Image (cartoon, rainbow, N blue to C red):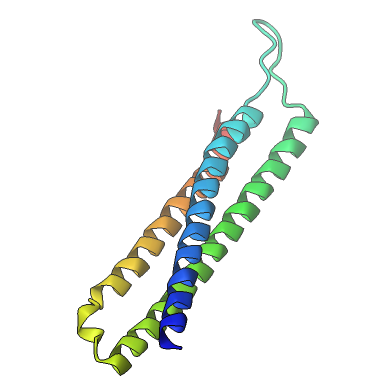
Amino acid sequence: MLPHVHEHIVQELRQSARTDTVFVVVAVAFNLIALGINWGTAQTYDPGPGLERARPLANDLILVVLLLSTVLITGVALRALGAGMDTRQRLTEGLVRMYEDEGVARYYDPVLAANYAARYRLFAVVVGLLGALAVVVPLIERFLG
């Protein structure tokens, strides 16, 4: 029975890693695309020399919707990464307990668990910073550009 439990935990770890990878890649891609779209939407319309620059109300509403969407999607991605980190930690702790019970825990370096947690924190920083840039840069363009 123990080999089946071990295989199940390892499979769960693999699935969790794949899911987290998808969340990170999608969140990074989304935030980079959102940065470009939000920045473009934030720009004022310049009809040419001698004419007044315009900021149509529709652009303002679209910008607000896009910025709120960016914040929401980035928040969901960060929450998913947090859940992934918690899942990995719990599964790894279960493996270590199993290894201790079997007398093979000395072959599992506890630094690995700390490295996993650090990696999740770094992923969250990247996703969070890109999300913040996708919101702040368009606002700077809109209000100072």
